[in-house]
Amino acid sequence: KSIAEQNSVDLAWKLLQLPKYNDFRRCIYQTQDELRRFRQLVVNAVMATDIMDKDLNMLRKKRWDRAFESSTGDEADTKEDSDRKATIVIEHLIQASDVAHTMQHWHVYLKWNERLFHEMYRGYKE
Image (cartoon, rainbow, N blue to C red; front, side):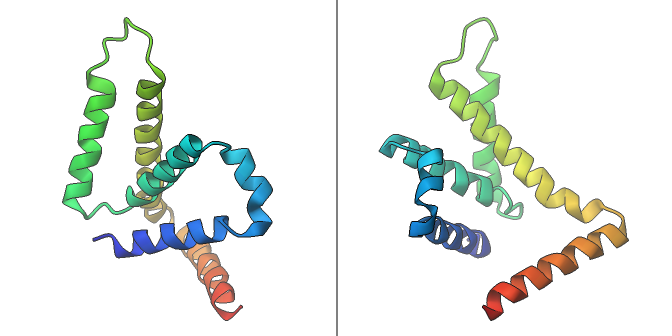
C-alpha cells in the first residue's frame, strides 16, 4: 500500500539525515520526543497524499473526529489535543494541495509539471 508515498518519505528522511543538514535538524528537533513527533508528522502528511487508500482515509477521518468532535470549546486544549489538531489539519492541507494543483488552468499545470519533470530528471542524472 502507498508504495510511492512510502518511498518518498524514505528518500526524504535519508536526505535529511545527511551530515550537511545537522544544523537544520537541530532547528527542527532537539529531543527524541521532538524527533518522534516530527517524523510522525512527516509520515502522516505524505501519506495523506494517497487519496485512493480507503483504510488510510478512514483512519484520517477517525483522527479528525477524535481531534475536533469531542471538543466542546469550553476547556483549554492539552498539548496532546493541540498537537493532534495541528497534525490532522496539516494532513488535510497537504491532501488538498496535492489534489488542487490538477485544477489549475492547463497552461499553469503544464508549466509547473514540466519544471517538476526537469528537476526530477536533473536529480536522476546527477
